[in-house]
Amino acid sequence: MNNINFSVVKNSLRGHEYTILRQLLPYGKKEGNEYVALNPTRNDRNLGSFRINTTTWKWSDFATNDRGGDIISLYAYIKEINQLTAAKELLAITRRVS
Image 1: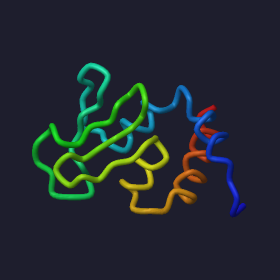
Image 2: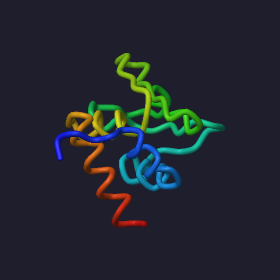
Image 3: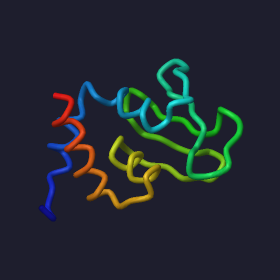
Image 4: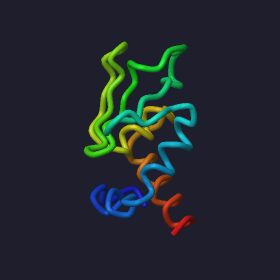
């Protein structure tokens, strides 16, 4: 299973994004249409610079300029894995909770 359709994965994630987000970033909080959290990939001590838009799922760490365009890239970034592996893991997660 080296090839994966990322659109299919994203579609299967619909409705599970917040569950995944809260598991990845448990100390975050919702602010409007953004989820603000500490960045677990660095020594982040203050909420504010790491934000995920919960409408578009684009995310950015304004302190490091790291950013991505969807929940798959966010998962890959936080887990420090490639996006193919992230997509496979997320697909497995959604299959278990569906």
